[in-house]
Image (cartoon, rainbow, N blue to C red; front, side):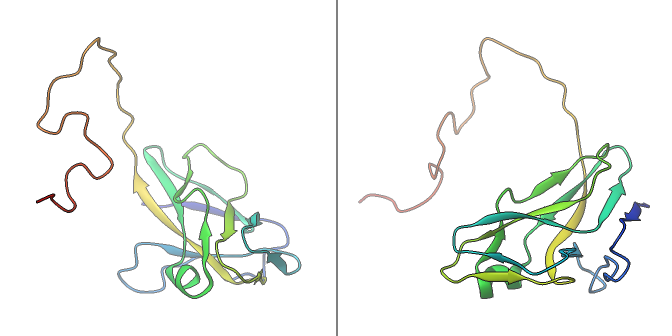
Length: 150
């Protein structure tokens, strides 16, 4: 599969997105901030990436957090995973949130997220007055596991 990538003006100095290991699921995305951006604890900001893309029909790009930033700095993506649709052609942005107790500063060319390409199925919908029964029924939110009462 081929994905078309357009580097936007002012992003020529940023590293190219790439898979960091042979079997990596996601490509690293870099911050295209023009100056450092500080996220206060609890704050969310849209961080530019300096690229746009064109995906083939039937695919999406998922913007996901980097595990190292999450574990070491408490930085995540608010709408994780963020979805980039096949027909979107604007700049990819990353909605970073500081879930920690200390400010975090995003530097230019810092790895801030990863991009995973995935197939998409558009389902046909059929509205019905009743749903068929199942063994689980309407049970949810932990209804299939957990501690049993003695």
